[in-house]
Image 1 (cartoon, helix red, strand yellow):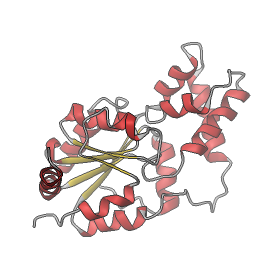
Image 2 (image 1 turned 120 degrees about the vertical axis):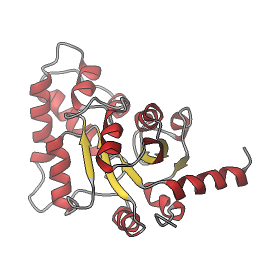
Image 3 (image 1 turned 45 degrees about the horizontal axis):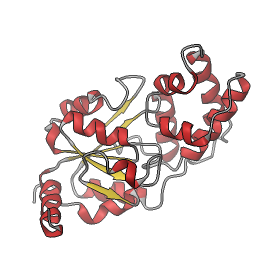
Length: 232
């Protein structure tokens, strides 16, 4: 497909879309390094083997139970790992600490809302973890719907997107899914939605380009020029 034809196809899709679904860690929140550190500390406290940063990184985006089992096998106490991880990841932060978002994220979110898009989150994070971050950021009312892996089948299963489509009243094929992992792109494909990859998280451009996608962006704040006012 020529560049002009591809641009026309992308513009047409944004014109017909009504809902943008964001991943959380590595997409909106600059948290991947903190997650890796917390996993290392948790493993050390529980006497589990030390894994490389890259191995841990590749599991981010899965539901926590799936990630823990993938990393440490069936013998690991998943409940204990989750408890200690939450203490390491969230418990050590001060009450006034604000989660670190990527540059331009809040501006982009408000731009999406001003243009008339419904916004949702589909994340491998736990409900308690996501709500903690949303509350600290003051974003709890910005998203029409939020889905977490302890409530739905883990990515790349399409369950979260199916729920979002039903809850919002939008057709699955008009949903735009934005995430940093191949899991997000594969989830979008399974649901019949369109996926956009960003390079601020766990996967490289080469890894993301192996999966169907509308765009691969350097960061989520690069999405702005593609937005179209809903209904125009």
